[in-house]
Image 1 (cartoon, rainbow, N blue to C red):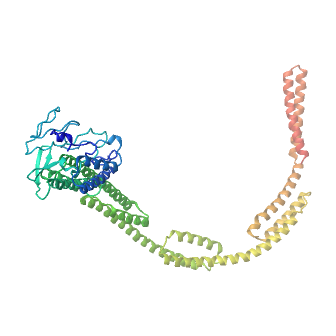
Image 2 (image 1 turned 90 degrees about the vertical axis):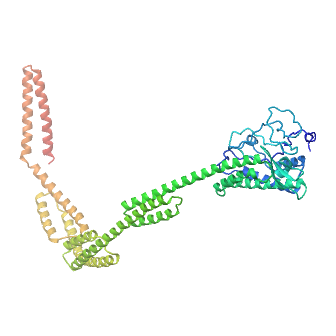
Image 3 (image 1 turned 45 degrees about the vertical axis):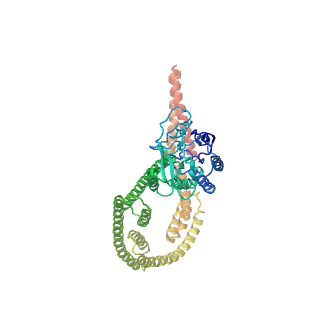
Length: 557
């Protein structure tokens, strides 16, 4: 017993270092409804360790309990400085009390030390009970509230209750003492420890609910209902312990559970909205495919993929899901009808293509024996164009008809190639004869233009009699013959220019005009008219240049 208890003064026995098991505060944002943090797990671990130690040692003295709590606190990592002080419990039941100073006395006990401000005394109880110990509120931290820590009762049962001489067990509450049971089976300390362990069991259940809620396991609504049920039964609970602290912890847990329920509801609503949006997008895509798709295989595969994805989307109410399914199903049926109509029309087109290609193959077989090479080859080219325009029949029929058409075509062009080979041999001989004739033509003497022209005419007649030559020999041979013809024509032109009387007349005319202008210049100079003399001289000079040009042309013919 402490010194104050021995003297009869009701001083509090709570030590701030051992009053509760220290809990590592949650990270910022780990309040009600937030993601689970490491704080609750550490709290549950430390509380379980302390309760185990207390159960083994039984009822301990105040100093011993303080030492055990200090050891438990040492096993827990130190919290950040900003969160070391636990926050006041949220909810409608805050625990009042001044942060420091003595607790109010119990009626019947010795007079308490004067402490301002005075508080009303609780109703009188038999015997001199110790003062009611209330948890001290601490200033709220700037961030989310840390979990309220409740001290296990088994560490110091006498702090929370007592047993009178008749074996009646009392628990101290905010409103005074309350009877929780009778103990006749042993020492009063054992009875008090028994009811304290029951309180610890209740506290463990609460901490497990809190840990499960913080970890995101289970249904938060179940946690909410369980916490409310425990809180509602605290007034009649047959336990000895910190009922006010446990109620505050339950109020905090209920607030967190309500926030978690709301968050779960919001998450379900968000998931439902996302699922509806995705199915609406899939239904819209299906409707677009049904209206516009022409790549039938790719579109059909896409419909299968949409259906597979559709089956994986959950969380939509039945009415909305049925409406969206009707849209998708209607679009898929429309696509299937369009695809069926397309392939039915394709079958009709293939039947028509087959009939047309049979006609073309038959005509090609009739033309295979023709010897009218040019027109028949042109007709085969037309048949090929018509074959391509006829479209495709069924693969087997189309391949068989193409084989018939191609065989007839190859037969004709093989015969034509043989005939052309024979003709080319004849044309090659003609080419050699024309080359010999060109060698003779290139030796024609152009000094006598008349004789050269007669020789060329004779060669040209023989050229035409020889006949055709191979296609690749035509241009070279014709070019050589045109060169001979050009050389003979130039010789004839030169002879004609030398004997042209008009050229001589132009030269005489130019001389006469030069003489006229010179005479005019001389006459004007004699008359003293220098201006007219200069004009006449200029004109005479111009005509002299023209005369020189004409004389050179006549001389070089």
